[in-house]
Amino acid sequence: MTVHLHWFLPTGGDGRTLVDRHAYTDGGIKRSRITPVTGVRAPDIEYLAQIAKAAEQLGFEAVLTPTGTWCEDAWLTTVALAQHTERLKFLVAFRPGVISPTLAAQMAATYQRITRGRLLLNVVTGGDSTEQRRFGDHLDHDRRYARTSEFLSVVRGVWSGLPYNFDGEHYQVEGGLTALPPDPLPEIFFGGSSPAAGPVAADHADVYLTWGEPPAQVKQKIDWIRGLAEERGRTVRFGIRLHTISRDSSREAWATADRLLGDLDAETIAAAQQALGKSESVGQQRMLALHNGSRDGLEISPNLWAGVGLVRGGAGTALVGSHAEVADRIEEYHDLGVEHFVLSGYPHLEEAYWFGEGVTPDLAARGLLPTIPASPLLGVPAANGRPASAPGGAPLLVGGGR
Image (cartoon, rainbow, N blue to C red; front, side, top):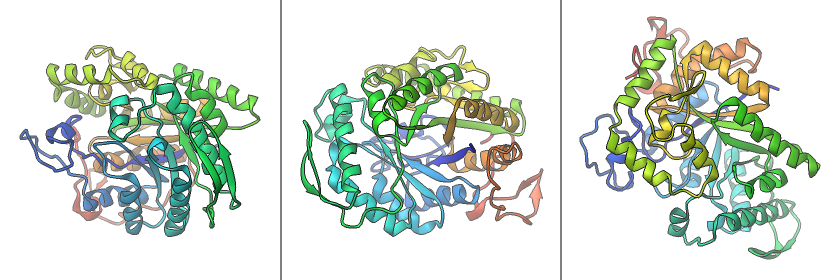
């Protein structure tokens, strides 16, 4: 079993700190800054295309695009970016409660034809009732997961190419049909840590995705979902969502983590923790429990840093260390059964290069990756062992990563 590496598209904005998205009055929608934060990057198509092209050139298989109020629409953004790339796949996050399952099946089929098979689906049930109500969804936590199960049953049924009927609590479909089913069928990524989420993953997920908890906790989740899937006669593969800070030395990597932490004041952390503490998501509560809102003891496992989760919802941990140390941790998770690694870093363009030029060759040397594509920068004059610049003129990081 080899490793599948994926990167992240910051469609809510990007920058050199963990809180750059809060430099906008409205989360980035109008790009109107309220503080003089430097280096904030709006998620326009030109910048996102730089990241997508870099990910493709560096050998990443796909990029995850998030969903939510403060993000650009994932479907529209990624189908536009498909015109700027050739092989890169797009892991499109979407909420099943705000779209018809038959329409979603049709959209996926069209997407596959337009992109020649480059769609993966990340089903996000939703753990924040306030966010869900913005989109007209008023179900409680467990009923949302029950609806997700019905939704995925309909999607797979409609993809059969034959008229499909379904009579459930949340959906009633008569003769649902995708005249031209997607080819290939998109893989379905799904995550959830609550008792209500487990059976949905076991019934429907191709890849169960967890946030970056310490290895022992990840193993417990894998054993849980694998057991439920085996009861149903199914096999589920596993993935993990992590940030990365990879450098030529461990000292440089931890200096970058310290710089990111130094950018956070106590008021910002307290406000973020108060907001995140209201989440109904069991996964989010597990992320918060890793640090309890404290700056102390943030290395919760070797090379696993919980500092991101002080202010960021969702994935709140980062692999921090030298390229070899980060590769060690990936190999450790891989030994537990994790196959897909969905990674990100701040800023996303530069961190893609740090990882792709540092960690990816190490993983390939260990036999965890197939042969990686030759870098388009081969032959470009190097400085300190690194190409002078990334495609498009974006400078690569040096020293502390700024």
